Length: 270
Image 1 (cartoon, rainbow, N blue to C red):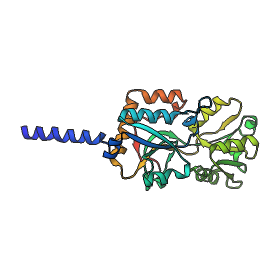
Image 2: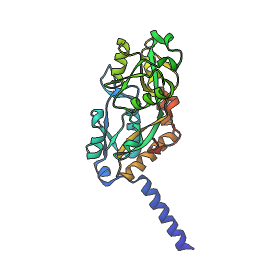
Image 3: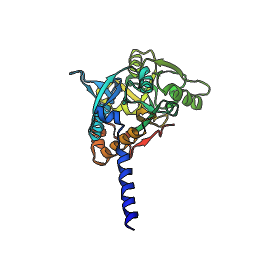
Image 4: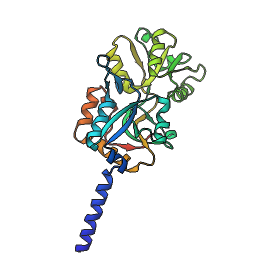
């Protein structure tokens, strides 16, 4: 009886330790190098007044670092370099509004921290022309060519605009899509639903959403596939932030109330 009890305690301790154990190289370094592209408010951007990195992802990353006992070292890069940086070990993680999709799982493992999905929007001045999503058929719609949005727009168009398909215009990121929309070069744009409330508050008379999200997605923090211990440690840290209310407070601060999750998941994207 005593031997069984001792063994059970030891196994329990090992399991608990394994759940939060950090890779030796990370633990000894005391920091995580995290890739970011600060051009996607309210998730990540530079404060116009101070040029400091800010946004939901930045504050979430720093909070995760505190839970893990690690300093977060932000490294600006380009979207195109995200996956190569993870694959070659130039960075330890990516935390930059990145969608968790199955085609990325060979290169990275995602700890999912937001629900999202692409949504159409137009200039407020033209909102009367787009009372429903059907009005988008045959129109020029722009979105970042580097994201999953082109595929999702095409799927929606095929399902709803068979005789008059959407004319997709690839843009150099979501900021470029908004610029082209304001210039009248496209009729509508698409970006993650998590950004629209913030942008509409920032520019109250600029944009109007059209319809609901056209797909359901997870946004995830990307880590190297081989780093199983780090993946679990980050998931545990996120769950701890959810439990103590810190996560909810960040959602409220950055107007992401409708995008929160109840528990961290790993590679839940499709």
